[in-house]
Structures are given as C-alpha cells and as structure tokens.
Length: 627
Image 1 (cartoon, rainbow, N blue to C red):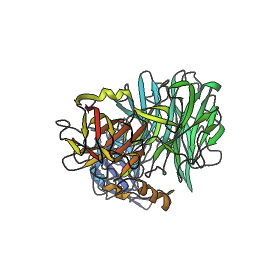
Image 2 (cartoon, helix red, strand yellow):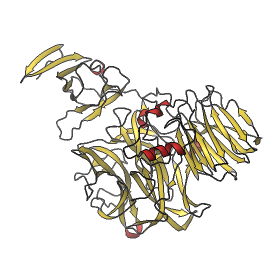
Image 3 (cartoon, one colour):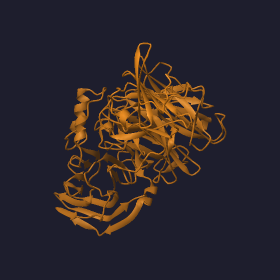
Image 4 (cartoon, helix red, strand yellow):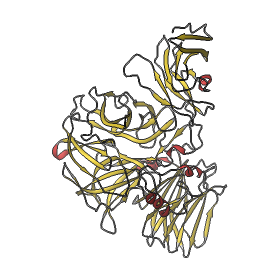
C-alpha cells in the first residue's frame, strides 16, 4: 500500500481481510499490520535508525529491505514500556529513503514513539565500570576474541559482537586494531551475520604464499556459521578474505568450506595454522568433547586427519575455542613441545567457563598428550578468563587474549552501554615445574609498561599484624598496578584493596592449604551472582563441587578463587586493577588469576596483614595507569 509520506498522519486500510494501521512520528511512517509486522518507511536518507532497547523484552526481528537475497533479520530487544539505551541500525544511503520491516513487536510498544533517525551515534562513555585501559567495544555486547592476527605493524582483534544490544545475540565480528596491544582503535564490524547464520568464533591467517588464490599476504578469516534448524542447530565452517589489511572481508562464494562428516551439532571455532614440516595448512575445530584436525593445501578443501579429547579434563565439560601452539621448553628452542589450549564450558574448577591446556607431541596428523586424561592444567585460576586464543603471524612470540567474563553471569553484569572486556594480553611460555611436569606461564605483555603514568617507590617493610596505606593516589580513577616481592613466615599473609565504603578484595598466601587466594566476596556489587543457574551439562554433584572448592562462597560471583603455590618461598606479585577487574600474576605469570569486580567507588587504600608470623614486603612500587 503506497502512502503520501508527507501528508499522512493516520490512516486505516483493509487489504485482503488484514487491518493495517499507519502513523507518522519523528519523520517516520509506521505501517502496523496487526501485532505481527510493522513496516517502517523512512522518507529521507539518514545513516542510522536509532533503536530504543529494553533488555528484559523479548527479541523482535528487524530487517533492512534492499531487495537482495542477502537481507538478514537481526534479533533486537526493542523497548516495550521503558527505554534503557539506544543502538544504531545502519541504513542504505539512498535519496529514496529506506524501508525496515520489524516482526514480533506489539503495535502499542513504547519503541514506536522513541525510534529516531540520525546521521550520528554518540559513543561517549556513560558507564562507571568501563575500564580505563582494557579493550572493550564502544557499545554493545562482546564475548570471544576472534581472528587474532598481526600484519604490517598492526594487531587485529576481532571479537564476537552484538551491535544491537548489550546482551548476547546477532553475532558479528567486531574489529579493533592496535600497534602496541594497549591502545586500541575501534573500527566498523568486519564480518556481519548473514543468511548462513551467526558469525561465530574463528581465526585469521596471512596467506603469504597465496595458497587460496586471492593474492600474496591476503588476510583470510575462518569462522563458524551457526543457525538454528528443526531439532537443533547447524554449525559449519566458512571463509572470508580481505585485501585491504583486514578492514573489510569478502565471503567465499562457495561457503561453507567444512561441514561435520557425522552431522555433529557442536562443531565450531576453527583455528588455522601453517605446519612447516609438511608444507600444509591445518585446522583444529572443537567437536563436542573432542578437537578434530583437518589439513588443506588451498584453504578451501579440507581433509579429516584425527581427533583428541574424549574423556580428558574435568567432567562434565564442553570443548570450545581451541588453539594449538608450539613452544620451547624453558626457552630452549632445541626442545619444542605442542600445547593445545581448550576452553571449556561448563567444567571450570570454580564453576562455569575456563581455560585449560594439554602439553604433548604432534606429528602433523595426530596429537598425543603427555599426561593422563584426569590431569587438568588451568591457564588461569580466576573466574573470568575464557575463550583464550593467540595471535597468528607473530614469529616466536605467543600472545594470548582472553575474554574477561564467565558464561554463568556474563549477561547479568551491572553494565549497559557495553558488556564485557578483554583481559590484558599475555605472553605464553613453557616451563618445567617442581614436579618435573611442563606448565604454561601467562605473563602480561611487556607493552603494558607503557600504561605507567606515575609511580611511587616504597621502602621495604615487615608486617606482624597490619600496616595501612590510606591513599594510593589523589583523584584515583581506579586504574593502577602493584609490583612487589612478598615473603611470609606466617599462617596467612597478604593485602586488601579497599575503598571508603568498606568494599574490598583480599589477596593472600594461605600456608595451611598451600595456596594463593583472591577473595572478591565483599568487593562491591555482587548480588547478580544469585541469578546463576546450573548449566544444562552440569550435574547436581558437579555444581555442588564448584561451591565446595571456592573460598568464602556467598553466591556464584561473590567468592574467592585460589591456585596451589609453595608458600615457603618468596614470590614476585603483580596486580593490575582497572574499573571492573583485578588481575593477579605471581612469579612472572606462573600463576595468573583474573576476576571481575564492581566496587561502588574505586579502591584507593591498601591494608597489609600477617597472622601467625612475619611478612616481608620488598621492591614495592605502585603505578598509576592510563592510556
């Protein structure tokens, strides 16, 4: 039904027995076809349709109509009775205006009075918990890091991104670039959800030898195309290539490039790497509770080789987001080992999602692990370290980037403009432990030293009781680093990060249990942890076990995490504090522990304490951090 968009204020039409109601608001015309479909007519060209969001509402389906078979609906939680924030929905730049179809949003919803057109979208920070120096999206949801690749002086960080709300959905590959791993430039999303489905996690490589035929040094991305199908889900591997240094991608016209030979539904997160001894490309893909290996000469046709993982790690679990890297043992490049990084959900020792790894040998076809299936090695002992993958094309440096959240409560954190951050990039190395087993160390990359803007070097001191530092920095904005050497002869010794409200994070050595602990049970806003429900794969026994092994458990967020450590020794301790997080590194990353925190005001005091003996603090410096 055509209508004069200028003169129409309200009209009714009866077409084939269907009532259609039209109204004009905010220079838009809404054609409501019952409570099922609304067609939005935009008379004049604009860059965005600004959509009002209410996170508690059900998802409606929003589609820009261009007449192309590639037009794709996006699932968006439009405001029903309350507007929490806006998101930009990009429009075609046409003098003839644009048409957007919206399904499953009631005709009397508040959104119809609030939708706007605009050529700009304000991304100025308005969230108190946005980190000062960690990578976050400008707006919207973020989870797994994807397609990490280094080329021509730039680190490309793609990520699972919902540009239409701060909860999971509409998976695109968001995109940021950096020259130093700490200063990030936000770019437009690089790969958008399409008719094959959501753009799930994957990897990217630099095709130096033109294996795929798109030109030498083309960046090629591999990702999972995910869509729901009757009776379950379809997950297949797709490919796209970029000839403009990763800014834009062209999807391979014959996608997908790999489907599961057995119809497996959980088949995702391809990691592609070059295997020099046999001059071939290898892809490792998560396959339910296994990892599968495939090989290819041209990056388009893939041949199955082997799989690994059934029965390995804590049970129950779900394998996701693999990486496969080769590292020297104790820095000796004549002794190389392969490490398989496996992110699991559920199954983490303290509940929800976490990152484990296996060390072994690989012959180009099959991986053999050095340890028994029940041996579990964690890359990080905090609750908020997941989907950890490594940059490609970085020569001998192995640099990993984790997602800093946990699937138990990722959608509930007290943030709205954006949701989720990446933890600090970590440089991985392989060392021999006291038990002669091989372990991964995850140290903050050296580039983090560029964040240091001011410092306080403190004299050495001993504590037998307590010692306080009331003010770390004037006008503390919540971003600082502690670096110190801690030696304890006591039963329990450590320190607390405090604010004037009594909110605190405790970090301490527990000699009786032989462990280092980070306790955030009283860190600030914690009650959203009560919303956590067991994962579908969790059993009553496994879910109860998570609670039993934590320290000071109050709910699935308010608790303490710990790592085993030899407390008889002195230890180098680094703590990075930012709005929303505390990251602990002990002995150069041999222990890493990453936890979210949401204090109502920044921590700006320190209380050192020791019980049952004396603690010595030396080489102590406090750094104020910023970009």
